[in-house]
Structure formats: structure tokens, C-alpha cells
Image 1 (cartoon, rainbow, N blue to C red):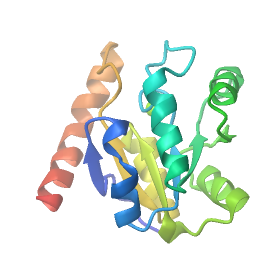
Image 2: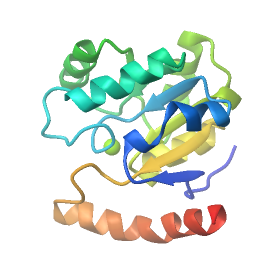
Image 3: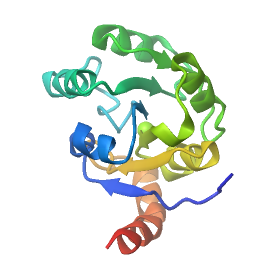
Length: 167
Ligand SMILES: [Mg+2]
């Protein structure tokens, strides 16, 4: 188990995590955070770009599941129902248990699983602890609130370390 906050690979946006990239890393299951990773928090329903992205993953034979810490459940449930993708709520990231539960549901091994998210302290750390590929994107819509800006600044050195590692 690793406690690193340095992502394995950093992307600008989820669409850059292509089926080709995932295949080349042996990934057959992509787990993803929802808020600020796939959509801004205020976005009630998935847009066409996200629908097309998930359709492309399905066409490539790559499983996709949303793993969210969202406690209200309703937003995630409605968003995922609209997308026709399974979700694991109350994931408790950075605990790896939500990721384990998601992997177990589809019988995926950790070496063939990746976790995509925007927060190092929850998404990335959960990925590292679960032993899956840790993929991180810049937050959709950028940091807006004061807290998001602080978090963004705190994450910067770890993202820089990731860029250096992959240079
Ligand atoms: Mg998020």
C-alpha cells in the first residue's frame, strides 16, 4: 500500500484519458470521480461530450464506473442513471474500500484498473492505497471558491513532481 500524493499521470481534462492510453497501460476498468472531474458541481446532467466519451470507452471494451464520496446520493444517482453507468456512492475516499467494492462488482484486478479524479487527498490517495493506476485531471471549470484555490495551490508541488517523473 502506497501513501503517495503524486499521481501516476496528470491530464488537463478527462477527454485526454483516451481508450488508447488506457489500453496501452493494460486498463480494462476506469473508475472515476464525478464532481470537478467529469463535470462542474453545478452541472445537473451529463453533456454530449461526456456521453460520447463514455460511449467510446464502451466501444473499446473498457468498463467505466463512477466512484463518488457524495453523500446526498441523489445527484450522483440521477447523473449516472442518465449516463447509464454504474456508480459506487459513499466511497469514503481516501479509503480504498469504495474502489475495492467497485472492482469486485465487475471482477476487475487492480493491475487492470485506473482511478481518475481531481483531488490528490481523496482520489489520488485512494488510488495509491488500492494499488491502481492514479490518474489526475485539472478541476473542471478551474478552482472557484477560496477553499478550492487554496487546495489547488497545495496540490501544485505534487503535480509538478508527477510532471518531472514523466518527463
Ligand atoms: Mg472531485
